Image 1 (cartoon, rainbow, N blue to C red):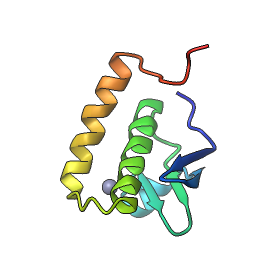
Image 2: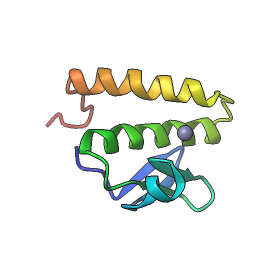
Image 3: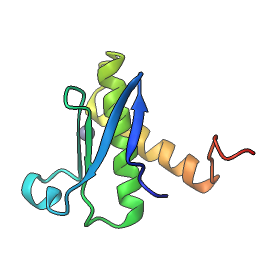
Image 4: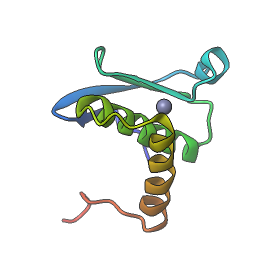
Length: 97
Ligand SMILES: [Zn+2]
């Protein structure tokens, strides 16, 4: 999947950016900020890992926007579980013509 340039979460438009040294410099594969409205993904990761990192950061921002107070472990579990279902079933809700 191509990582989109922009992504809307809770009515806010986030810009997706890439940093090929993010993991090396911060030990995080991705970062997101609800104030600067940015999602940053390590572009040195394999494509599938970039996709699940995007999903993780989306979940982080849903957690922030809707004040779900999910523990980080739960976000990581949801990332893995949702990624598997979406990927293995090729789910794309917007591709109907
Ligand atoms: Zn996280």
